[in-house]
Length: 85
Image 1 (spheres, rainbow, N blue to C red):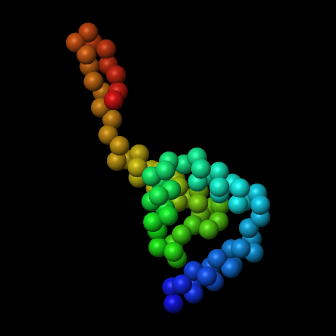
Image 2 (image 1 turned 30 degrees about the vertical axis):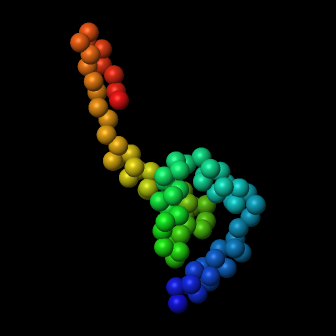
Image 3 (image 1 turned 30 degrees about the horizontal axis):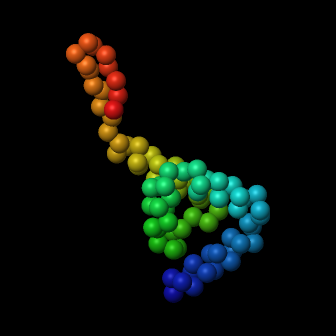
């Protein structure tokens, strides 16, 4: 059942694709962090983004999650210099 839903969804979206949108999606995938794209490609097939708008939303939402889990520390040297690491 799920494969049929995915196929139907792909057929619906394929009518609306144009070369510019496909190229924009390609550029988004190429320039986003590898871990973000890897996470999105791990979505179940029915939840996979298909349009440019869906890809933008997915990349931003996954990217925000990565940023919130990064840890930044400020270090102070003995001379008083502060740097982030």
